Image (cartoon, rainbow, N blue to C red; front, side, top):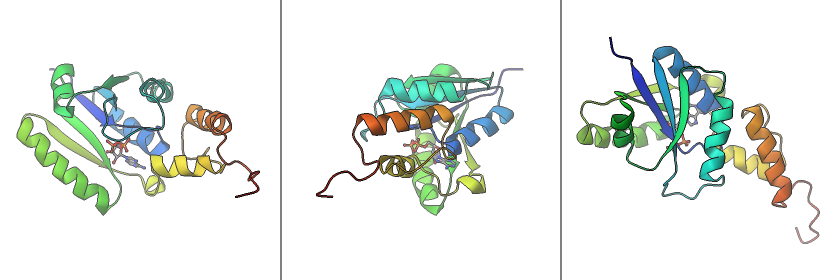
Length: 173
Ligand code: ADP
């Protein structure tokens, strides 16, 4: 029997525990999961391509059937390239549903042989998003329970380096 391979594409800017939860659950469902970090994104990312790949790789290091790679093509093209018949996406709220539904229909038109698989977020990650994490970190708020340890370290270091607000020293503030 051939292996069941799935890809999990996203921007992962940065990876959060919500993403990780989806990866771990997908790793139980499929023989091999390729986490695909988008490197040619319309939206500008906070972390570089290499950083997002490295942070995700570190977070997935203990999952033997998971590999992390970058990609700069259409999702369905990558799926075909790595021999995946499944594309995983996570769903949090109704707003995610609408976007994903539209995307799934587009992908189906492009590649009818590829099945989209939607995993519902675990309730503790319902309100967790990469943008919220960046916002909190920029204000110096702790995010350790929202992201993998390597990401928390990077956000702390990045905050200091970029001179982001960590304790309001600017008198004009
Ligand atoms: P994209 O820019 O492609 O939406 P993201 O990195 O924002 O990439 O998200 C990648 C995938 O992970 C998406 O399917 C998104 O819905 C899902 N996701 C994001 N945050 C969570 C979360 N807290 N719980 C479950 N799934 C999530």
